[in-house]
Image: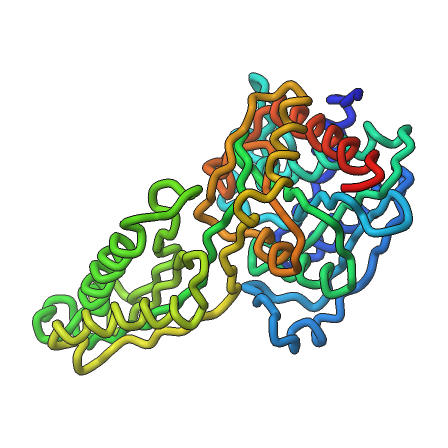
Length: 407
């Protein structure tokens, strides 16, 4: 099947040029672009405005970390009936940071250099989205016995609202591939994650009289050591298919103080906490809070002024393809048929929409262009050959699953 790299380049340039940071109007514009593109390929497109109030009132609402007044869903299907295959990709991206730090100074303009494309989202995961579109284009002239579906979603970066809404609308299928970057492997299991906020109190005084106060930064150092110890304990014996440190604890935002010569009396730390497969959110939170409480008990200041812990934002459960499920082998075979290196089934430490499809009873894996190390980075990039190879593998999988009378 022919994969046209020039059309992939055109699609990716257009999609990257839409600065679809979560919660922005451009997030809506990106969904309009995918709906128009899928319609142009002959798919029957369901584009709908999400009922945010209804979704947020749902007991299983996955949470959000950005403000949204409007959001849209987009699903394209190739024909009637239950799709034999879903291809999923999210169009929202994280903020680019300082634009001047990007080579060329514009993260929203695709740049090509030495066999790679650069720009915000080319790896996570607009490269995967355009690879899905290229696969749909490649099979558009074939007669398939069963349909496939393309799900493009918003909100993956801050909780998974888009896929949640898509499943709630009734869009389903027999199996799913999410085109997240997987570094030429197949991710069959994800760790989960929670977003935490820790507020630490200190006692302010003039910086020249430091000993008369108590720095909230010093108090937080005690808690941060406890979190490092908790991380070590929780990651001591990860099960297959996970590798080293599958459930990390990281601090992403730290605020303290408002004047250089004042001892800070308040610190706010926000971060990400890995959740293990089979672990409930309640159990994960208890382990975290108990570790901090034990640390506070050993520190005179924190024993009297314990921190406040809250859990804002997205709740990503762990998810997995059932062990030994045949769909993993089917994806391996499709990748091999495309001419790409034979992949392994691995576990990933980050959360994704895999857990939502898995919870809905849809066998799901991730396979997509790029390396997660590139995601969210300055000068985010992806190998052009990987985008093309993934498009070819998706096309092979569509043919394999949708041409058969039984799956």
